[in-house]
Image (cartoon, rainbow, N blue to C red; front, side, top):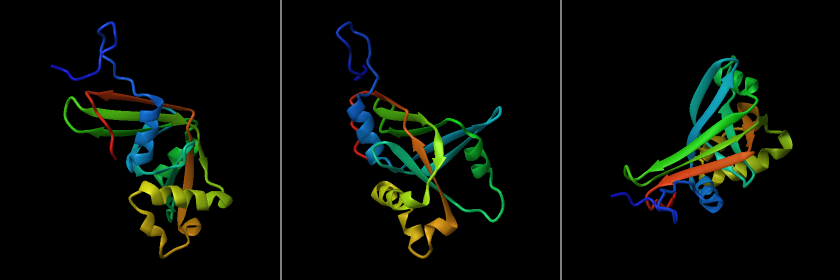
Length: 156
């Protein structure tokens, strides 16, 4: 027996409300960033910060070119997926889509503040100037959708 909510017509309903999507984006601390260059896809697990309008990401500045940076510079529109699974019937996922742009120097304080909320690694900035050793990117949320199964309630 499924615990997935049903519509009045008896169909199973999986779509999350905007409020549920927002709550999950604010509580989650990592997901998978999907990038594309030409006909090749590249997906990487990333910690992130969310400011209500977009997602912040930080990459360690490489000594040489990195595949991550090559792909993010070539990607016109990225996707970011966060998910949580409690059981096979109780799960939730959110997909965020939009352009990714470099973080400007004047926006680093907003980046650091958003990362401090939920990101896994805010302490990496304590011994260094993040603008010298790291590269920041911002995914502008143009579309955010979510699906859930069962009576899933995302707590973070």
